[in-house]
Amino acid sequence: MSDLVPPKQVDITYETDEPVLYAVEDGVAWVTMNRPAFNNAQNSQMTYALDAAFKRAVDDDAVRVIVLKGNGKHFSAGHDIGTPGRDLHKSFDRRHLLPDHTNKPAAELLYTREQEVYLGMCRRWRDIPKPTIAMVQGACIAGGLMLAWICDFIVASEDAFFQDPVQMMGIPGVEYFAHAFELPPRVAKEFLMLGERMPAARALGYGMVNRCVPREQLESEVRSMAANLCRKGRLGLWLSKQAIHQVEDLRGKRTAMDAVFHMHHFAHAQNDLATGNSLGGLDGKGMAAANRKQAGES
Image 1 (cartoon, one colour):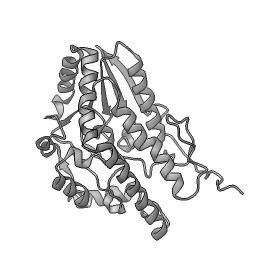
Image 2: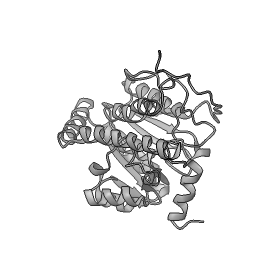
Image 3: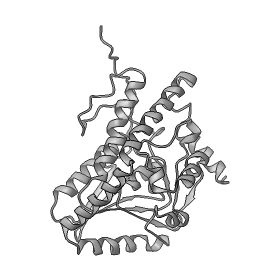
């Protein structure tokens, strides 16, 4: 008797065949999330395209620095939980030694998938041996935080804000749980438990952001930082990056993240049992509406 299940058949409509754009200029690889109509919500199509772009940049010895940015008004609205391109039940060629998730029952499906596309991918990208810069404008919400946090530097526009509102779903933060390493503990609790927007200027004060500039100066500031890094030695930058990561991991970053990942999936399972939906019945539109209401927007 098999404990596997038939994969769920769903309609998926991708609005683009290029969810990520890639260009190299003066030793800098520009990796651009390209779902502006959905505020660069991250589905698996985008995740695997990001991974391919990062690998392309790593494989190219002419690339010295990688910049991650988003097309449109916002950097990223987080994980895709409601667009026509939501591809939760689609199989992809995996990047880690993990099985396909689509034929797994109950909580095992999400647990397997998110080990691959969220926690696993973010850890993989954090360890890229070249300097990475997140160029953040507008919203950087939930899963968008994960994409910014894996970068070595975050340069934000003055109109940018950071937020993890998944407490509305009863979930203790996104899968790549770096909250208490990016922020002081009480501030991390406020950020996570209240779920309010943190302006870029406040994030700068806590060291979560390196630089905060007017929107019209954002790209030039990133170019200046990238040019500085391009003049440095390749190996020295890699070793410096590894040194800081070693300190973070000695402080417990990896083991804490493992523990919270399991809490995250316990919350998904509780939602399934209590409401019949792993997200507690919320979708992208519902989350966005609640977010705007909390922020006092119409």
